[in-house]
Length: 262
Length: 237
Image (cartoon, rainbow over all chains, first blue to last red; front, top):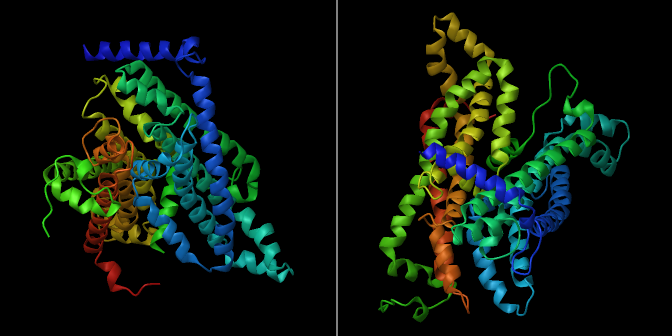
């Protein structure tokens, strides 16, 4: 009985997703295409800001070993519940904006997304530079490289795998939290989940879940592909018989835990 | 000071610092949510560890299993929690708002994280230690439980801390789709915040979530200390 129900539900979700009417905007409803683009836009803005903060700061702290407390401080944010932060900032900021724009919801959401994306980027960048073997940097200095050259020609390329795992972890976190932003309420793919729940339209709700999961997997795959081209073979260990260390969201989470305990 | 019990929250102070007063006014409800929140954060990690131990051991014992195991768990860990919450019921044939969907989804995350942690923890046991254990007559099974797992405890515990702390935040997300836990406080705060902001339940929810995460984290830390007395016997490197 339950099995049949599940099969039926999967069929309904599939037909919800493949109905072209759901992908286009109508006078009453916003379609999947628009919400998908909105979701990607929110995520890219947040990731851009977070990278602009986290990357240089992580490189600086890793290179100079100064200000490591900042990394620990950023990691302390991990225990903050993202929904709570989102609701708090929304009720703080949204009433100051009136009219037909959703800017009053966009600003608090972006603040939360940046707050969540900076720690993984910062701590993985720091850990990446910190993990570069002193023998390598000493050799670079011995060859006559200056501090800046050591940082950009040696330490940065060597730490790219960890930096990428930080960016990938941040991306997943941002896509996930941008979904919850529909709860406050804002556009994006989460709209379908929360609207479907409210209207007891479960195919729509589950279809929204499928879209969010698909977006997260696609984004991670894209970043993994970029990483393949960006990271030197000598560092990634690709094509070597030993095999390099795998990188992904789990590694990034564990790297943060390691950094935290230092 | 006498606080007049305010049935209608609008009559109470809406200052963020009034969260303690809000807690006192709604104590039984809030404590109930805190309790379910704590259970929902802990039990999936425990179940996840039980499932991850054999899987992690297998992927350490049979090397060819390691890459596919890590790919699958990495893939599962990639799916955002809110998406996994709504995807679990149709995939498992549950009704669309089943009370089990959240613990099952959280167990999936815990397994995904912990398989890797267990495999790496077992890999962190020095070869000399394993050989010494074998040399003094330990069977493979006895060596696993008496030597390898205890030596791997610090690595596994680090993974448990990550899984538990992130669980606390994900349970709150489940509150937004109607599950009764501390996430409900955010729903209430949002609903009461029109037209002007009403902070107490929101701030209370954040404070309780952070406290819960800190307490659970400390408990794991203390248990790890107790389980690894030998680490305190040698001077830190």
